[in-house]
Every structure is written in C-alpha cells, then in structure tokens.
Amino acid sequence: MYMTSPFQHNQHSGGPNGPGHTPQNQYQQGPQQQQPFVPQPDFAAWGINDATTQFGMQLGSSAVAAGQEYVQKNFGGVIPIRSIKQHFNVSNSYVLRKLKLIVFPWTHKSWSRKVLRTENGQTEWQSPREDVNSPDLYIPLMAFVTYVLVSAFHSGLNSRFRPAVLGESASSALGVVIVDFLFVYVCCYLLNVQGSSQVVDIIAYSGYKFVGVIFTILSNYLNITTSNSLYYVVFLYFFLANALFLLRSLRSLVLPDAASANSTATVSPANRRRRISFLFLEAVCQIVYMFWLVRV
Picture 1 (cartoon, rainbow, N blue to C red):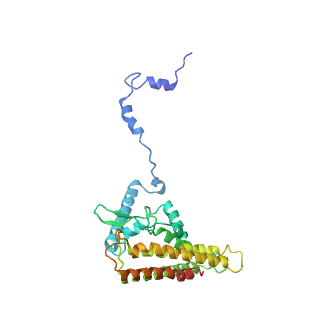
Picture 2: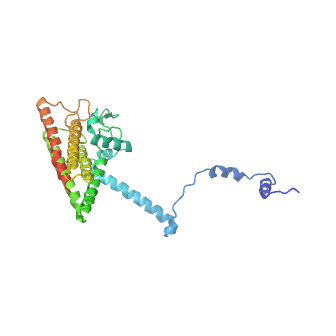
Picture 3: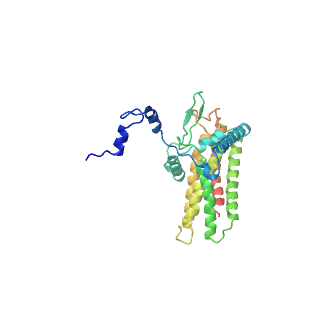
C-alpha cells in the first residue's frame, strides 16, 4: 500500500492555483528569513512600553552627549582630556612589558620614545599601546588602588584594621604623589622644560613607585628570619630600580632629542647640566617617598 506523508502532500498541493504551484509570496519571504535574529529586551515585563523605552534611551543619549560637550567646552583647556585618553590606551601585552621594565630596568636597552607624525606635519608621542617607553595612567592607578588594599590587609593581619585605614592610606599615598608632582613640575618650569602632555606624563611617572612599594610590603611576609634582612634588601632593590627607571624615562621629558615631539628649542650647556642634576635629585628623592609609603 502506498501512503502519502503530509509533507509530500503539502509540497504537491500548493494553494488556490492548483497542485505543484508555489505561491509568489514564498519567493518574496525567502531573503527575509536569512536575516540574523537580534534579541530585544522585554521591557513590557517590567511594566514599560516601547514608546517609554525609546524616549528614555533618546533622553539618556542626549544627556550624555550634552555632558561631554559641556566638559570639553569648559574644561578642555584646563584638563587635557585627549591626553588622558591617550594615556589609558594600553593593551595586555603592554602592561606585562611595562611591569617587566619597572621591575627589571637593568635589562632594557632602548629608552627613546617613538614619535608619530600627523597628516599636518606635526609630531606627537605614540600611545602606550605602540610604545613601551611611553608613560601610561593605567598601571599607576591600579598600583595606587592595590597599595591601599595591601595596606588595609597588612593592618588587618596585625590586628590594627579599622575602616579609617583605607582613607588614611589613600590620603598618604595621594599626598606623596602630589609632593612628587609639584617638585618635578616646578623644576621643569624653572628649567624651561616644555611639552605637550607634560602634566599627565609627570603624574604617570609619579605613580610607578607604587609597584616597588607593593612588592616591598609583601616581602615582609616571606621573611623567615627575625632581622628583616629580606625586607630591607627588597626595599633597596626597588628603590634603585625605580630610581634608574625615572632617571632614564624622565630624560625624554627633560632632555628631549632633536627629533622628538618636545624638542622646540636648543638647550644650552649650562641649562643641560642643571637638568641632569635635577634628574639625579629626583631619582634620589624616591628613597624618601618609598620609605614613607612602606611604613604601613
């Protein structure tokens, strides 16, 4: 006995025009069925209709755009927003290479920053993503937060934790960064050091010391002797590492090369000697800053 399945029956009986005839609207609906399905949030389940949702999204977008325009218009000349965004342009590989550079600066060979030439013929520094020698704000900010948390953890292990420890550690660390920033900024002003992103660069360089401070605090838990010899050895090592790192990194800011983005005038031999002395003084001052920070 021959039986016809319902699928075969539907294929041969195609509608009002007779068997074997396929309606024309099936050809028109074919391309529409190939479009990808994009799930939409069900705002109706929350008691919000589509009109209210669209109005809220448009209102939120307009508010964000107006806020960005207001900040750029009123604070664009005071706060270098474009430079700050560029200093956060980092990648995972950059963070790893930068941390290696901070911890082991002795193995690094080339300290010159890369220059990018724009279409207008101007020169500017490349972003940290493309240049490991470029300063960033991501590592200093993360190191700052980690230092505050490690300080609170250290206080807790010594039964000295209280909620005010977080604020005290953050205030102390911020005070060190401000003092270091003002010292470098005032010296750059007196030595007539100019640069397009000088303020943001100085803030970034002032925050790299927290990496060595964190390792120094953590080394206290690895000391198996009662003389704290490992603690002082680690502190001395990271002080020297940070001093060398700043000495070589700040050179691109204080003593730029002739083809660099900050090279606008010729430095006289006397001014050059003063700038070199300032670099060594800034490197030596790191022992005072780091000694203050490790006392948690």
